[in-house]
Image (cartoon, rainbow, N blue to C red):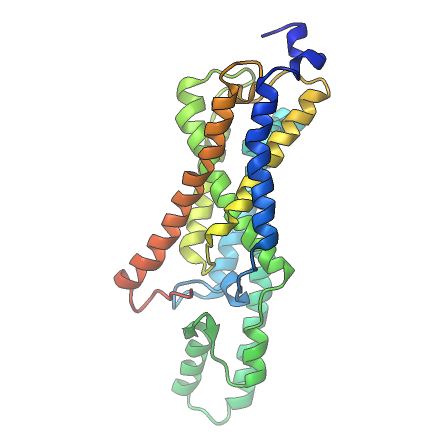
Length: 317
């Protein structure tokens, strides 16, 4: 719809506007209350950088995360170089950027973990290298790396054990929260894109190309591969962060349109249609299965892999 009806005060006094506003304000408020009242779960710092596979060195997880960060950053750069800052008008690029932030933070934390790992190995070797045989030394190294009991790694001294078992700080909890937000958002992005936009919706300024297709595949693929390697927990209550992320995007779009923008990046965000409340309600509702689908993947990983690979997989939580 064009003309004055798409602009000005008249557009915002439609009956659909307060109904749609209520649909995303209620989940936003509920998510904030849940986050404020929920007692923060204990997060072992080791789970952020130790792989869930017994003989996989933490360095490989570091290399993978760095590779994912560089690859996705290059794709985003290519997209921005073609379309400019306009690409951030879309939820896809918001989520894609958030996944990049996750892998950047994961790379830094993995690098710090590998540095801790190498320091402890050297301390162990220096303290017992002259008294142990080669076989004992290898056994100690393997034990340090893989013998996780209730999410901890046994080392020689109590001081070392307390240091390496310390609870994750701000950056650790931030990394886990971003990880779970990305998981739900990537599922939502790809389901809406491949299941709704591509086959059914014709959107102005939209044309499917190789770069766009790669972005809507690699965001979830890189996360799933990271999930297959990492030891991070996936509690349900962090669905609240995913909901807040999507609500932030909706608020961003509403603010832009209140400032004079008349074009919506997704037709189902348009407020002038009488179907708008139904679209908004469906979008709010779909967050649950999107997040739940990823949570099921993590649960299947922790229930299936120990049976299939009893000597290789380490269930840390």
